[in-house]
Image 1 (cartoon, rainbow, N blue to C red):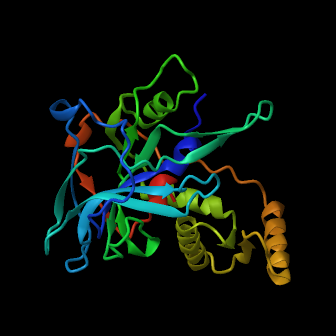
Image 2: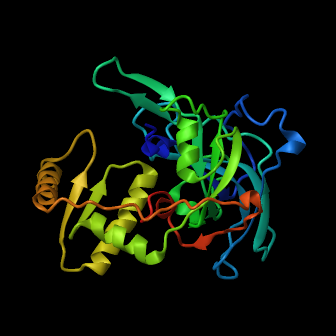
Length: 304
């Protein structure tokens, strides 16, 4: 059976960014021969962004990528196909005329019996996000440039058609999960996750304690820091601790890490259901996309 978690390291997003250059190579697997018969236009707006604080450009990005190194998940993001936004412009049309950059994350498959091997997924998943000014000499972006995320929609790209005869086929499994057709190219899918359901999952994940983390990849660290601040704000009396995920730890860090681990293990096991549901999108690319100011890309991906 296809495991939805396998596409987690190849997240793409459609980024409102500050760069028009692309240094990541474009794959040769993409949209050749589709031309006029397959047009991918995303139409959207900036939602609740306050006037004067809008992003500066719209483009396609991919998050997170691992630069070909297994285990580097959560560290990198890149942007491509940038389009500028004029002063006060609150709507956009994004033309996905080319395939995504070759940033599909490297995975390792290990069934515990046969020799482990690495492979590159044929699935990239994404959403629309807003970015402010950034270093335009590189196509890499960082969390401090993210201004908002579309939480009700997502984009998935398949490098090939699905193979329904293969029960482990990534494309077929992702298409069934997200409610789209298992065909090569881009698809716009819908997400249903009411705020109260997101909040319930978040509190379940905290499990009555506020744990900070250090030593994570840039985007994972960003999300962890935001979650810790929210946890402390909403549960000021909860016990606090800090994990340190680095190759070396100081004696104090090691003791605190062990204390935090013991604290987590002492709590009743929490079974937290994802707040995200994918009801299907019969409108396809005719559905408009709205970017939510201040939203977190992880809120889009994992729901909290």
